[in-house]
Length: 70
Image (cartoon, helix red, strand yellow):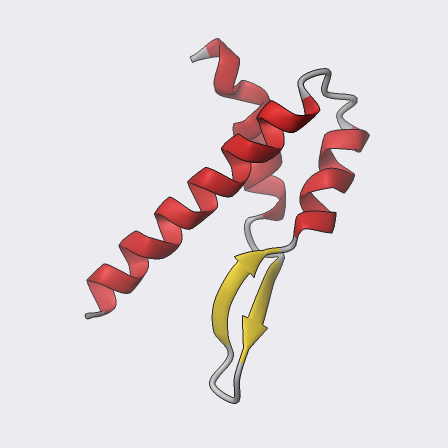
């Protein structure tokens, strides 16, 4: 969908930029600074909407991976 193109572009650039916690390095979040940097780099007009979409996609993917791992 056209309205999701910016979020998809940002997500695919920063999806590996994550925050980890604990000795086992469990992924806890996407790096928000990396997301905002790409939003700025692409000069996206709907900054907050794009940020929210990227974070939602990240959490959905993270949850699906955790479900698959058991």
